[in-house]
Image (tube, rainbow, N blue to C red; front, side):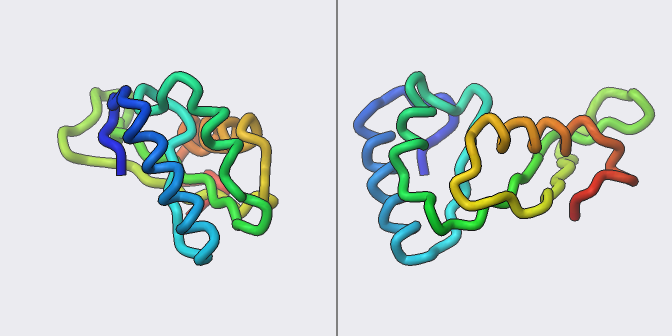
Length: 111
C-alpha cells in the first residue's frame, strides 16, 4: 500500500510489482484510478499491469451528504457498481465511478 499523496517513485514501483504478483495469483486488488493519491504518470503505471483476465468492479467511496447539508464527519458512502469487462479502459472505469458518485444512493444501479 502506498499512502495517499506519496510521490516517491520507488514506493510506486514496489507497489506495481506487488500488484502484478497479486493479479498473477488471482488475488483481490484495490487500485485508486483518480484523485490526489494517483501519482504523475499513474495511468502508465496502471496500464502496465496484467489486467487481461481480472474482473473489474468499480467502487465509489466518498463522504455522505444528506439533503445538501455538509458531509457528516466519519460517515462514508460506498457504492459497488456492476462488473466491467476485463481490461476495461481507464476512462470507462473513471466514468462509471463518477456516475456512481453522482447518482442518488437510493436508486443507483449498484450495491
